[in-house]
Amino acid sequence: MMNKLNILTFPDPRLRKKASPITVFDDNLKNFAQDMLFTMYEAKGIGLAATQVDFHKRLIVIDVSDEQDNPYFLVNPTYKVLDDAIEHFKEGCLSVPTYFEDIYRPKKIELTFQDLEGKQHIEIAEGIFSVCVQHEIDHLEGKLMVDYISPLKRDRIKNKLLRKKDDSPKN
Ligand code: GNR
Ligand code: NI
Image: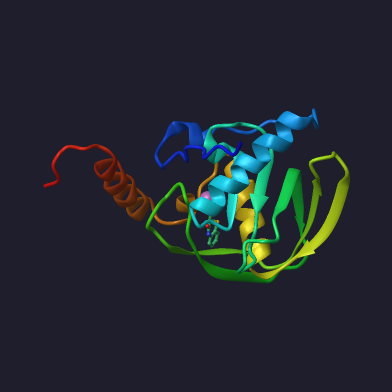
């Protein structure tokens, strides 16, 4: 019933594709969203964008609850920044495994999205939920957490992940 999907890893070029809007709200969409949620829970993540599982449509799953019992399904999400306050947070990414970096983002946003039925919702987001929404919407634009850090650091991470991926003996 549930499929565990493969998560792409930086610097896979498919992570750079821009996702297109979802226009059909059918059972395929719901099933795929469930597979994404399952994949995210299995990977111990708090968010997953469709881009990360090589599906280039505007779909995100998020669950920032401790019990993994409060999933959000965001279809065609957008946000507006509500004030000038910027906060930093140690972010991780399932597509950049084992690296955590301080990333600065607007603190408070107004999030607009559709649910899996196509119904529109508007919510104010702050804290970890806001951080996660912004991180996931970046994925839909082909943008990654590492784009906010120095090119030198980014390159180092890239090379380490590439070396980890191939099975040639290290060093
Ligand atoms: O699991 C994740 N944790 C996380 C921590 C801080 C800021 C953002 C995130 S999202 C990340 C999962 C992921 O890669 N989503 O795209
Ligand atoms: Ni991520």
